[in-house]
Amino acid sequence: MRVYLELIEQLNMEFSGEADFIRVDVTGWSDGDVEEALSLLKEISNSYEHYVLQKHFCRHDEGEACTVEVIEVK
Image (tube, rainbow, N blue to C red; front, side):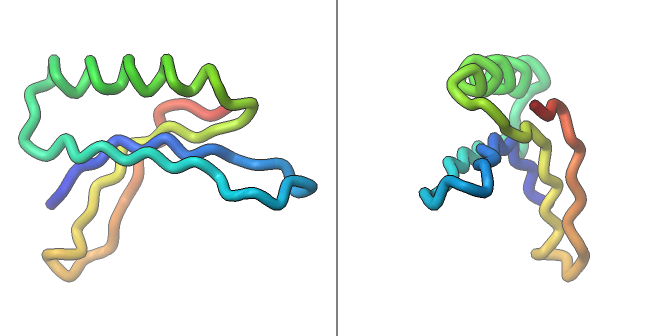
């Protein structure tokens, strides 16, 4: 299983541009390092009007479905 932190910009329907998507592979990282990366993503999220910050548990390698843990939504 791979574990990712993801910051996904949510655009207004009127905006035709491409949303930002940041993914950090934290598989095997210590809890402290994951928290530090999460803090940095939260800092970056201040640049967006609307976003989703989540932890993505990817199980494609095992032939299973992925799950996400939503951390913050604005």
